[in-house]
Amino acid sequence: MLNLFILRISAAIFLFTAMAAAGAQDTRTVTLVVPFAAGSAQDILARLISEPLGQALNARVLVVNKPGAGGTMGAAFVAQAKPNGETLLMASSGHHLAGAMYPRLSYHPVDSFRAVAFTGSSDFVLVTASSMASPDLATFVAQVKAQPNGFNYASAGAGSTTHVGMASFLSRANLQMLHLPLKGTNEVINELLSGRVQAAMVSAFSIHLYKADPRLQLLASTDTQKSEQIPELPTLHETGYPHFKWTVWTGVLAPAGTATSIVQDINRAVTKAYADPQIQKRFQQMGIAPRPMSLAQFDGLLREDWQKTKAQLIQSKTLLD
Image (cartoon, rainbow, N blue to C red; front, top):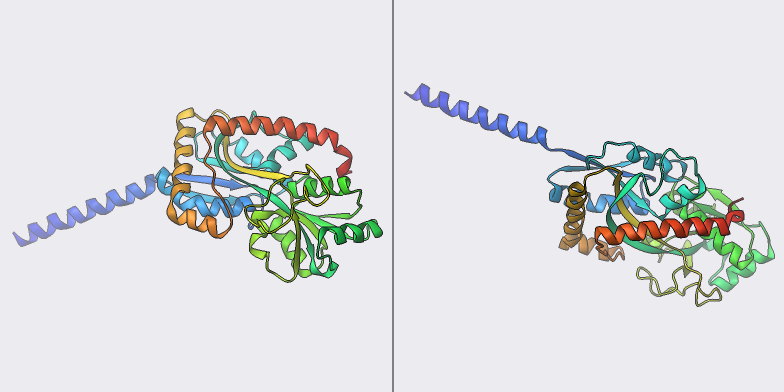
């Protein structure tokens, strides 16, 4: 009898273990593609929400960096993926910039994707290395104007938001600087900290943690209103460049053809992740204000931004020559 009891217990344990293993194997993996290097705004956002997003979706969310060609390599990868909700893109305004600059891409920045979830927005900050000794915007402008092409500025890549934003400001201020394209925002900040690069325009989200670093000088933000991340900064709008505005949106996209029910599920999961008190706390520490948006609102934002981006690029096409 004892042997029979032990045999039954062993069988039950084996069955439970097998069922648990099968359940683990059945857990699906959702790949969240970041089309830029580690340390970029999209990368940080993706990693912050990956765990709560996975819990909400009952899946394992794997963040994968696929940088290169101004974010187009990662975007192309997602555009060609199966529209089953298991491959997503953490996109930003640079997604539309690249699409407008390179019309022969293998995908269309709007038609090849579906809006899934808006994750936030950020202004930019004009930053210089302390070696420039430019404590304010007026001093910086005077220095650069006195030495055309005597200083350089870095960007996260040709055609990136950091490139076009800085080029737009230089054109507006009638300044000339040498452009140094790098592989991502993190590299731009590192080069600024080292003093090998004199200036850059990076998102307030990315530079927020370095605002007290003595190796950097934060001169002005690029929205027409004060930066939420660094409210003590003056804006370009109020320091001699009225109506100058350069901001970036971030959001999750899925391949075109993804079922509406799947998109709605992911949208609800992202909204739930953002409502998590721990995520809210971590976002607040980094100066991020999550802003949930409906699918229709985010889709409208994407289509409006695409048209605006194309128009802006046509007007300023000589900036990037």
